[in-house]
Length: 63
Image 1 (cartoon, one colour):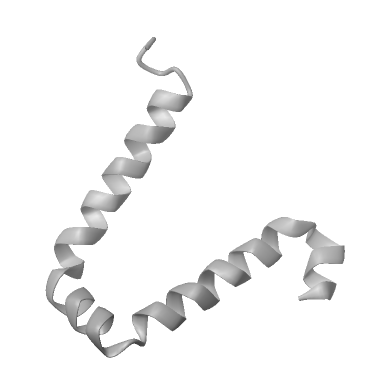
Image 2 (cartoon, rainbow, N blue to C red):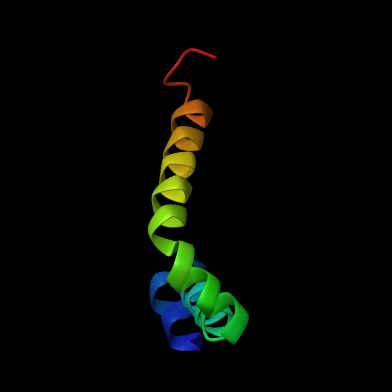
């Protein structure tokens, strides 16, 4: 991780940390069961919300 941080800055290290955190939570039995059942609904909702936040924060709607 230190090499990635020196070569690419802190961004790649932050992505690696998010991936490890995601793997940790996704491998917990209770969370894995919930993701297996609701993941097909949850993922589009999360992506739409992120997209709307990007539009709003970027001033795309003039708000």
